[in-house]
Length: 246
Ligand SMILES: C[S@@+](CC[C@H](N)C(=O)[O-])C[C@H]1O[C@@H](n2cnc3c(N)ncnc32)[C@H](O)[C@@H]1O
Image (tube, rainbow, N blue to C red; front, side, top):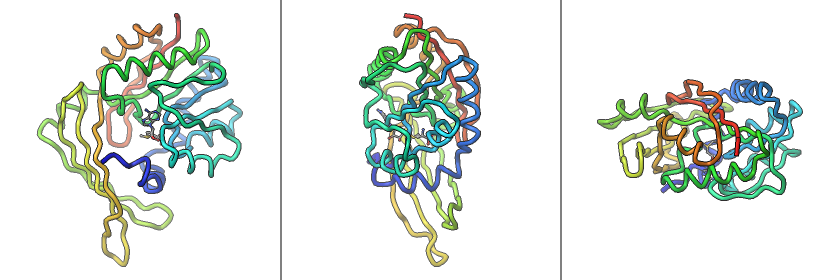
C-alpha cells in the first residue's frame, strides 16, 4: 500500500531531510525563477514544507499544494506564514493564476496514466498567467530503467536528530503504463542497538523520457525553454523549464 505521505509522513520528514539538500534545491530553483523574472510561485507536491521555508524567507510570494493532509499538517507547523492548499495536481483551481509553478522531488512520478499526465499539464496551464513558466524534475527513463531490468535491492541508513533510520528498497520493473517500476520500502529505526521495523510502503513510480514530456507540454500550450540534467540522491533526473505560450 502507498502510505509514505500519510501514515509515514513523519518518517518521510526525518529521512528525506538527510537525502535532499533543500538549501541547494532552493538555490537551484530560485535561480531559474529569477532568470525568468518570476516572483510568485505555486509549488505542487509541497510535501513537508522544506522548500516553502526558503522561498518564504527570501521574499518570494509562495503557495504550496499537496494531496496529503498529513504532509500539509507538518508543512504548516514549520511555516506559519506560508499558504498551503490541499489539492490534486491532476485537477486544481487557484483563486488567482500565478507566474510560475514548480514540481520538485520527482513528484510527477505519481502520474501513472497518460491521461493523468495530460490533465496535470492542462491544469497547470489553466492556473498560469500568459508567459508563466512551469519547472519540474523527473526520473530519466533512458538512464534509469535499463539498470533495474533484473530488479535491484538497496539500503539507505541515515541519522536525523540522533535517531538512526534504515530503508531497504526493492525495485522491479512493472512497465504497465509507461516506464514504471514497483518500489517496496521497509523502514526501520534503531532501538537498543536493534533494528525495529516502523513501516512499509508499496508504490508504483513512473519514469519518463524527455521526448514524451515535450509532446505533453506542446499539447497543452507550452514551449520548452530548458532541459537540465541533474543528479538526485538515488536517481538520474532531468529538469524541464517550459513557458506558457497559448
Ligand atoms: C516525493 S514527495 C516530494 C515532496 C517535496 N517536494 C520534497 O522534495 O520533499 C511527493 C509529494 O507529492 C504529493 N503528491 C502526490 N501525488 C499528488 C497529486 N496528485 N497532487 C498533489 N500532490 C501530490 C505527495 O503527497 C508528496 O507530498
